[in-house]
Image (cartoon, rainbow, N blue to C red; front, side, top):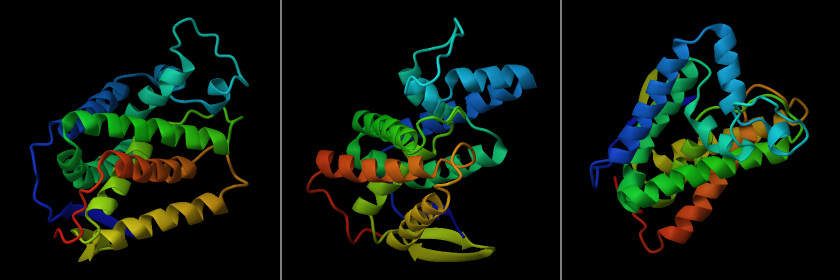
Length: 225
């Protein structure tokens, strides 16, 4: 298991958007901690992305509910626990600042949001009747990782392999991660409805690859270390 904790890429600009995303996710999670168990459940069902609601299979009657399509955005800022939040924020911290540097602040926030929405749609396509809310930033972060590996495949990533620190190229770290998502997704095809949204990760990564290729042509940093 690879756990990245930093890279050796210098920042091109101050990553204001990345820091704002980190802050928002942490702030919303701290808000979640103030809620009672029943209120937290209502919050997650209201702002999480529920495939069956988005596809129209189930009608959500709560008068305070937001548009189902809008939950593809709001769900990206909700997390199910400390470990869920910490894992996502660690990956965002390691990879997002350099992608923001390549794209600039405005393009990066659009890239991040589009990657997250397309990741959510990928999950919905894989399990359209599920009534389990999808939450978390991992789909958008998958898109960021795709952008990173396209631009910095040789970048040095510091990782923990179990408990041992190592330095590996980004193509190995992110490539291994993506391969593991595909294997887990295929292994869990018959067990949809809960757990990890593997196809959101896969869809976010593919979306990030395509979008980055379209909006950042000719800027490849193959030798960056």
